[in-house]
Structures are given as structure tokens and as C-alpha cells.
Length: 354
Image 1: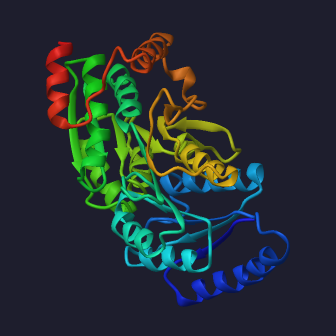
Image 2 (image 1 turned 180 degrees about the vertical axis):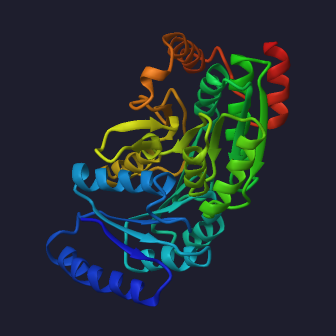
């Protein structure tokens, strides 16, 4: 069973200790083979319907399918990361996940303090013998999102909404812009950043600016800020859309009438970043006693990224668009198309494809 606590309070850590104490005693006497896995979210926490929730889905699956004991602690700020990671390690957890690139330093320090504990980090690489590092080819899924935007825009202008302007989010932007340009090199792309991943109102305000500048489709890679982008799209008088990220955000764009009938939807599709797959894979290694440190990379070929099935918008997207997506997806999987990971590479890619 998964128990969820807010990570910032001393009470939270005490509760984990009390819950784990009896479990430890039982393991010492009768169930020493039990595997316990802890997960520390980044400051956005659960309920982001995106990155952290996807990681939690991997924990839920591991609990059900692998019969491992799981515990999730939410971090309320960046200062929580180290204390939450070390609390799990001090309690004897076998494997501890740290979610997000912002947790890198705290994870690295915890791994040094607890060399006999296994750790895993999502979206960063920590080169230590007891750390498994999982990263994703976000550019590949973002490229497909860009193809959708480039082929579906009616105004000839699309937007990109990023969170913090760091290399990781630039990967999303580079892949997206390359996809837009290969679909339609005449489309204008406007990119703006919120500066964080948590301010929903800021995401809404900046998205409204993008729409006012002519964009009719926005792809976001901005955490909870993207929820604001969806709200902004709903409020526009003209037809405006969002492409979600990390988790399946398609249902968040649905607008219903008083009788519960769908009258409109503003999320075309979502670029799924399957953090749940990585979390489950590492849990499986731990359970089977085959934990291996090092860098694991998840792209289209590995099932690490994908677009959704477009449940609410499939009737709005022409078969020709779907066919183009599938064609380019196969080229990426087969290695015939290499998607850029930086804006510098993206500029060269654009010139090449023209």
C-alpha cells in the first residue's frame, strides 16, 4: 500500500518512522526478503497530473505486480529533498527514487552518505556505483507533437510554453520546433518561459499572450504551469488548443454542458513521458536482485515517450496527419531520422529538411 505525506514537516518523517518500525521488526524476524521502495517527489508534488503523478503510477504498479512495499513523500520545497531522501535511507529502504533534475545534488549527497543503499534519479545522471539514472528522449515525443501542431494550425502560428529555461526543457523545445518545421516550414513559432514549474496563474497569463499574438496551438513543457495554459485555451473566443506533456492530459481539456455532454475539448493530444515505465523497471531490478547502476535512456523505441490515443480529438485530426505521425515515428525508431536535442541542432535540422 502506498502512503502519501507532505515532505516539509517533521511530523511527516516521524510518521514514516513509526510506520516503518513495525515493518522492519517483522522483516528481521520473518520476512527478510521484503523489498521496500521510497519515492521523493520534486516540489510540484502529486496532483500535477503530469511528471510526479506518472512516477507515482510506476510505484502503484510495482506495489501490485511485484509485491514490494512502497512509500511516497511529497516535497514542498527544494530544501526538503535531502532530508526526505536521507530519512528513507536511515529507515533501511532498499531503493529510493528522486524525481526531477532539481533533486540531483541532494540525491548525490545522499548516495555518498548511504553507499549500501540503492538510489534512482529521474531526468538526471548521477555517476555513482549505487545510483541508477533514468533519462528520456523528450525531443522524440516533442517532435511528433510539433508535427501535429504544424499540420493542424489554422493561423500559421504556434506557441511553446516552457517552465525553467534549462537544457532539459530546451530539448522539448528543440524537438517540437523541428517537428513543426518538417510538417510546415512556413509556420511561425513563438516560445516563452514561465521561469518555474508551479505557478498555474503565470502559465495562464503567458499562454493568453501567446494566443493574442496569433498562436492557436501551444505545446507546454512547464509542469503545473501547463494547467494554466489549458484554462487559457478554454477561455479563448476563437478555437485554441494545447498539447499536454508528461502525463495524459487530454481529459483536462474537455468542456461539458449541464447534462454532462462534451461540447468542446482544447487538448489535441499529450506527449507522454513514461516515467512510470522507468520507475517500474528499476523496481523490478531491485525485486529480482539485479539492480544495476548506470544510465538508462528511454525513447520512442524503448516505449519511453509517445503521443496519446487522442481519445477526445481523434475525429478532429485527419487521417493524413495520423499517417504522417506514424511514418515519422517509424523513421525515428529505425534510426533514419535523428531529432535535434538543442536549439543549435534544431537550426541545422531545419536547414537540412528544407
